[in-house]
Length: 158
Image 1 (cartoon, rainbow, N blue to C red):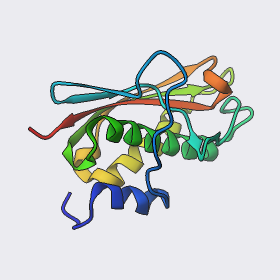
Image 2 (spheres, helix red, strand yellow; image 1 turned 60 degrees about the vertical axis):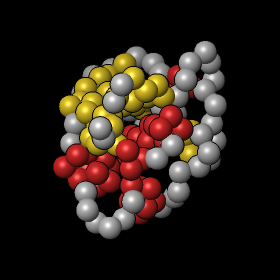
Image 3 (spheres, rainbow, N blue to C red; image 1 turned 90 degrees about the vertical axis):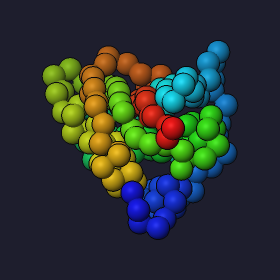
């Protein structure tokens, strides 16, 4: 995307914040792992300044608009995890895959709409290279009772 702005500047425009230092994972895993020209993130939660944005089930405790905002923050945290692994987000060639897990109330079927919070953000940041394959899955529970968790796979420039 040739806007004259860096990836981090575009992230800041979209989110209104710079990427903070990455918080350490709460377990025996890493936030992101590079293999060849691919980077895989661990599932990222909607943390902002060390606190979750919301808790509860989408379709009962959390409305779709708030869940979409949570998806944006999960994506922000995925990009931060990728930066921790590769140091420079300009190395990203394309976003390949995004998996979105939605803590869903019984009967809730709007997972794709929630996932659009992540997908639309990635296109705003990366343009055509932000378009990706995606899964939007309803689940019974998520860690810390958050409404959304996201993992991502990106390819790096050769």
